[in-house]
Image (cartoon, rainbow, N blue to C red; front, side, top):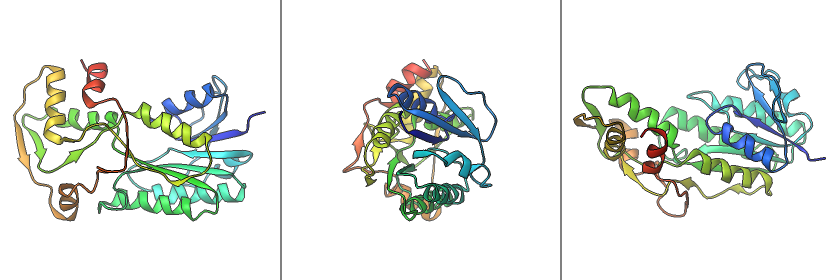
Length: 253
């Protein structure tokens, strides 16, 4: 009988792609959710809260592998520490974590939290794999959609992104999860680097809208880091194939 894989964040943007891929590979899947859900399609749902450390030990029990996808704007370090301790106590054989490119270079609180979460995984005593990925197309879309509702669209100078398709991230994570622990693996980014103005113009064209763009400057240390490309991995990253334009033609047009 196949060993069970626990997936946190299995109902989120990434998890909705990961879980079917694991099931298609013949894996027994358990998903940790904060809300009760009925089991479906061979997936068992268990209830717990990572930040409150409620139900975590029970969720991990009996699992050989844990794939940690759950995340939020704050508290990822604390939540991941709880999961990592439970995984160590349950003698999990492989702990896999999805992080963000620039977690070790961009001075923002949520990225510092991501870096602390990476350290909790690495220091857990459980064999581990961490993948840093670029911003997903879905999150990029949410950002430009919000800005495009304004009469004038802000265009932060020097801010570049290399958005990646969530399905390609899911495929890579499943490959890593089913493989041997590999530590920090090469980053995964999209096939092209765009400045934010390009991303906004592409969205506006796809929606048939017109908006003026207004250059703005991101202040402080974070602004300097973004202008220096600290949120990018321009050399040595694994690159996806689906571009921002491909994504827009499917989702928006």
